[in-house]
Length: 208
Image (cartoon, rainbow, N blue to C red):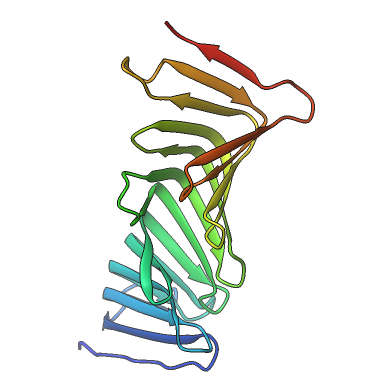
């Protein structure tokens, strides 16, 4: 039998609607169709929303497992980033979000900005999100590639960890100018990048 469920929790405030099916397995889980959840701060501002066409909730571990997840991150109650992934988990009283598989983060700045990775972890009490596995940031002008990055949604700065490859797009297919460094810091809104290397020098290549 289909049901509509709405919960309100004091902190953080949580609202979600879904349709719940009986679970055939014996793992004490509920299957949820058309999962939709909104997380609010104490002062009533929307922090993020989560949508999934099919998910499950384990009542023992209190973990949501979601397929084909779409997450929207908000600033001043307006959508700032949209994140899509193959699947995800919500745990730690819905304060920790873990996304896996073909993660794509898109900004709504009007520019063609895209950040992709294999894994994404974020605790909503912390402004920093951890991205690992084939991390790549790309817009119309540049490409930044590394195996790990920290995305700070408060400062809009992405810190890329060693090794970092930086490519400036030119007339040829992406290979006009390339920098290899231990760390790089890219500001999405100012479109500025800073390179830092503690041990090795920053290496640059120019292609003609």
